[in-house]
Image (cartoon, rainbow, N blue to C red; front, side, top):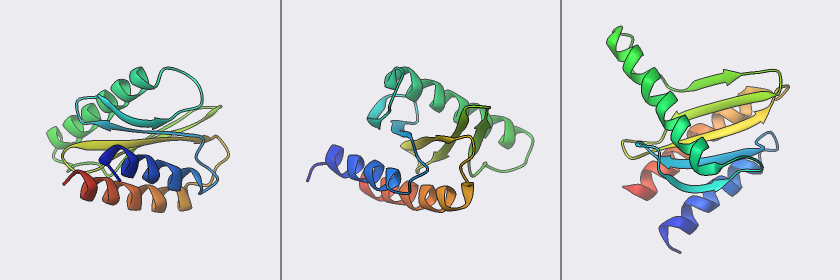
Length: 120
């Protein structure tokens, strides 16, 4: 199994949690690695998510608050959650607005660790 297939399996496993509608794994500079996105442009989504997470990390570090564990964006239509997956990647998911975040955050943390290990 090559790296792309392994990363794709991580996203498939995330989707099985039931609350994840779409997901992407991107490099820290916003290049799409793999995606399971239902609507929209996955390359633009990956780039903007990397920019958002990078900006949050820079702002938080600048204010001496440490590196954030995640960025969550909530709207009436859903939630977007971005998590760093080591120095090379990030993983982002979209959930319905009414999704409970407990299980999603646990599974997202596990996925980020798997991605970090796959990419070395």
